[in-house]
Length: 442
Image 1 (cartoon, rainbow, N blue to C red):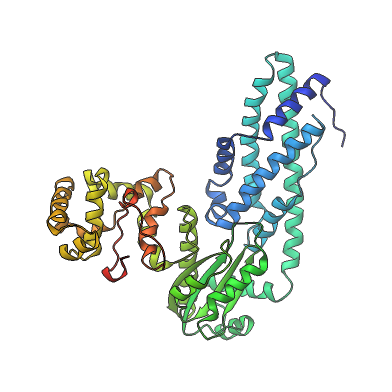
Image 2 (cartoon, rainbow, N blue to C red; image 1 turned 90 degrees about the vertical axis):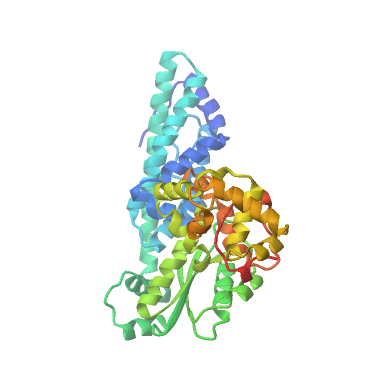
């Protein structure tokens, strides 16, 4: 297909603009990521940490690819980007059972890129005719580049889909998908194809890495570590290049597993333990909740269980209602100083035993009581009348509602179960999650 080059002057303007685009401001990349990972049609991309990370890498790959091509040959037609990042997206989309409609993210990204490029263009020239030609050529170039890249990725997805219809992994994925969807597949047939018994108690795990440099063997070894302690044959399904789905009978020793995990870039989300085919499905859905929670909170934890994040997950499921709940429950205590909020947190964790709480702070019992009295003045209702709600209303929940990471909110549910982890400083000690006194860090 013929491609008419612009005038020498406009080619030089495009080259200069492409040099700017090679080093975009961080806020441009953030806007591009938000756009390509928002909206109902892209929800599955956004909720899966591996797919979301792959989409972000593809965004940067496409931007750099187009800009670099226009530095080398300004105004020329840019070929499709068939680098590692977009091809990895194609592979993972197919392995997740998604179709070409997920490539709508590229079209959304195209719109953002055009708007940002227009901002660059207006800094390059104020001459109307040059600007008209510059924008005309640029729009055609970006549109053709996205069209060609989407077509090439669609073709790659077709090849990946054909490859996945063969072999043991494909059979396992198909059977697992039927079970998770609640399809009426005979249990004996499913067990035979999976090589895994569907009766008894199941615990599901998701093992994944968002780092594209992680060796695939590392994921498999961690998956083996997760199920090694249960003493029964487990089931591992290759969900994507960077993700393994695991099921095992019984439940692993979480403390031992957490202490023995290798490969820091590989993470583990552990579901609940439940019985039968319904338990097989429920435990996996709970593990998905944990995985999404860790990703949404930008938590550094390598392993987390459903029990550890269930309360936070419930409270943040509806951000608007969560915000109302926090403000209604905490009132002025939300902005109180760390001495008061720490006193409340430890007091609740000590099952409202003032002597035990004072010993853990440590402080004098009378000092603790004065701080609790101050908390009562700030709370809409006295602490004694509303202890459960206050204990379940972390201050950092407000941050999650406005989009700031709330890893601190998760930290108190995890810290007691992790050896050699130091207690959070008082500056962030306003995360109040009810834990048993025995599990509090000393």
